[in-house]
Length: 412
Ligand SMILES: Cc1cc2nc3c(=O)[nH]c(=O)nc-3n(C[C@H](O)[C@H](O)[C@H](O)COP(=O)(O)OP(=O)(O)OC[C@H]3O[C@@H](n4cnc5c(N)ncnc54)[C@H](O)[C@@H]3O)c2cc1C
Image (cartoon, rainbow, N blue to C red; front, side):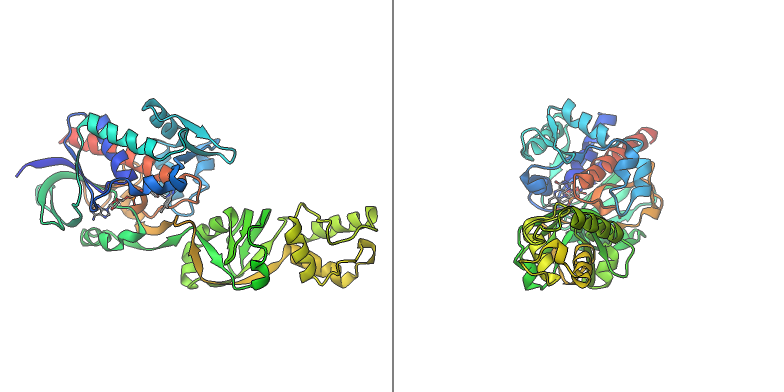
């Protein structure tokens, strides 16, 4: 039986980037990508609403690392070798022109994920990477000579010197079995990046309103997040909510998504809000409270908060009672809602959990337990918030794994 150099398991972002990295570091190696389904790069295709948010502009790698609720310590070693700026260079030198949007997300200039897919397919063909569809890896046996015997769901078997496991996250929970059989621990996979379901009809009437700078916090937990909050017809969404869902993914899973969320709609502390209202009353005593939002609160939200504070439509600032003032301050800085359940954000989610990072060497992405076994992408217990950080994990870990697989092949 022919012994292949590298079996890449998974034809997604990490599998392709890893296979290309091996070939870039060792041109004459024999690399095969085994993909379980009949489709390659399916998540890349639908990513970023079909535009593929490749990475994120950050001033430094330490700033980049702040966007990973899990895996930042591991990635700090990985990013020393390949980080966001390397991603830009990698794509641009291969003909994928990129653009940075106002919020620092980076996309192909074409606004189409097809540019990325085309780039990968061209590179794979140019470098002579073999692709086998419909090959779901089922079983791995480690042989006495350090090689691996692979068995696929379709009955295909082969021998390989090294393996790059790039099977992705959550949907592939069953696919983790061959890893546990090899002694690897899997941190229980659970969803990250979701929105909050809140059954409050009054709130739902504000559907589509965005509070541009809110602060959200889960009562009883330490995690909090700041940024825009979008009110939807089922509850709350927007960057701050998604960030919070990622940072508290484990705790919210344990609470079975039943919890209390606290919103400060203006992200200004209570004392300062009181102070600013008092100054406003002094300078604009005759102004109506309703219809004249403070703190740049959107008008529909302001009216909702005034109604919540039982402020009459004709009330002027000079006539506001102490009680109503207190209620308004509370509504602005401490609105609380009961969350019951979650909703996937535009079908976009990542997995919190995966291969335990203590069993993987962050310098090489090789297993600490089994030589020749490497990991990349979402299969690892690493996940980022939205904004291109999850692909950056895929590119960086697979580039590092590919480089070190090539090194292993040179040594043997
Ligand atoms: C709708 C959506 C939009 C997204 N948009 C963005 C975005 O714009 N920017 C961003 O940074 N992140 C985004 N993400 C997250 C990002 O897509 C993933 O983090 C990334 O695709 C992970 O790459 P991966 O190669 O590790 O895993 P995957 O892309 O999941 O690829 C794994 C591959 O392995 C195959 N496989 C699984 N098990 C086996 C097996 N046993 N044998 C062989 N093959 C197997 C699977 O079929 C799959 O093709 C998005 C996610 C979703 C769901």
